[in-house]
Length: 305
Image (cartoon, helix red, strand yellow):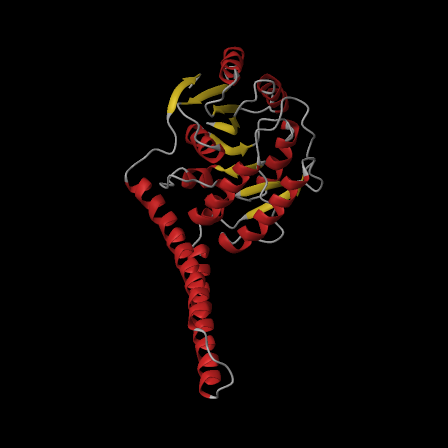
């Protein structure tokens, strides 16, 4: 049984693989540990670099996915192989320093199920900071995240939490959503966020939106609730408008032109109906794919497993 497992989803980060592995090995040299590097079907030579690391360090497990599954699915693949009493999840770009792993570990050892790294000063683009803020606000409603907790990609989980997370049967995993479904015994500590020195970021606006939608539709009925509220508001507005026009018509204050009113109402109500159907369709689509048994990830090859 390992004491610490470190799960790293890797995508097009060939420049970082060997350096992050070296730093983890140095930071955890006094522990019985393992590194689990999950290649999410990278287009560069990331998998070749992972295999080199596996050959030089038997504490490194390499997993290569058959097709690109996305960051959360890649993490879930790594969690399925993790044997540690505590499991660290971190990015592959060295903006999370491996030397901070022990800070998370020491805090988790105080009896917490999960400890997040809180970055007071994030060294990333403005749109990413705004996206993180917006995602945090929505997650307070959708998954019950406390206001003071920052959903950092750098965190440590207890073995018990990991064992529950890997039971998840939905095709669209969202790791932070799963964490808050499993436990509320969560804390965070301040840790420095480092500037990326090697390679370039693979995260863009489209991927950020996909993560947001996965959280919203995979772990919350909030979109359905919102569409229901809009439906009630629309119906109430239509009822009030009808009363106003009827009063004006019977009092002779205005001659109601039916076509204009009808077109406006049809556009308003038709748009709301289409949005509601789209939201329902999104949920039904996820249920359909899950029930059909489509895998969350497919492992093509492993090293040192």
